Image 1 (cartoon, rainbow, N blue to C red):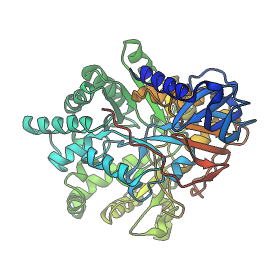
Image 2 (image 1 turned 180 degrees about the vertical axis):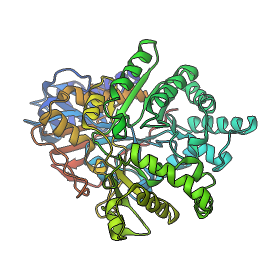
Image 3 (image 1 turned 60 degrees about the horizontal axis):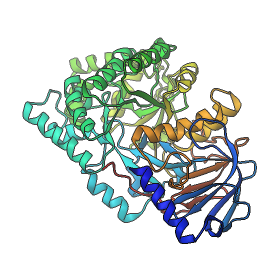
Length: 524
């Protein structure tokens, strides 16, 4: 249906112009090396744009155009689609500069079980203020569970489950592209698989997908992957293992097994994919090393528990275990503070540094006490250096892995973020394509464009074809690279020359233009 619509629009434009030779384009991209996003080898071609549409791909050397972009020596690709984006700051940062300057033209928000509510109201607000890139959303399991059960550590009653299911249906009706879970996080961690299956059925019925921050990514990774596979089978829904990784030294190398599990499930006809960011360090709340039961009821309840010596001892023991086997890897220097509102001087420093500031030895016991103190004071966001580069590359090379930032919109000077917020897509193109040869350039572009587009069910953007939306990136494959580091994260990438969003130049000659050219995408 959508292909017929695109053909009709294209035909009307050509008819109005009289014939193709008389068209005046808004933008012509000349002399570029065009990668259409399908994973094949590129062609030397020109691209002609009128309004928000790609009208012609071919020889336009004699064409009339209001704007001509010389792409000689540059790659011309579809705009990048970020399948895991934390868009919470978008009302304050509607231009999305930290994303757009990476080449991202479409971002999928609402990951890890957390989404705006109600969806329709949020999408309407974004349309009214204008945004710098296209956005789509998932409806969050944690969000609807909190709506109904708050932070209670129990299974829902039948009536409560029906109410949660109705909210998932509402989110889908209002434009969500699927359901997300954050089964490591409160309150999603209090759910069982039957609850998630029932809610996922609501998204499946509306043609949606299921993306999951798995229940465990360390020692419990295998049963967590199996849980996602079970949900796909029982709810009849496509599943994405989001930011797929192997956390903690005891698990390094185990991506061999998780990828085999994915392959086995796909061989049985299940639609299982993954997305991934190209770094060997994760970013999340420091509460991830605190047992979920200890956080039931919220931070006030947590404070009461750690004030009780017996309860505190239990909590501390589990934190020590997690620091040893999971996010910390037994070394307090692997836990780096990123955002600490109650103690900004900690930002950029490690748990080991904090212990030294207190005159403490960097033991697991002291580290656990500091984690408790941080949570009592309101929590903190941290970078956890607990992954293995071989696993990162092995997962990246899997044909069903997409590239995704797991990034939050940010502006320079705001906290000490993970460098992926600025550099994910250029890092893949520079480090993993050009420098390491982990992927070919056509493979990388496919993982950034058509694979996510088809996973979302997008039909009018995600690859370069006449009649498609003009979301396009033009970059130098010999120079594109990320600049953001764990030490100095607030740095934009290099080598991205142009980013075109719906036919408008959001980045021009490497400079951000501050446009509001994005569209709100609704599944329905």
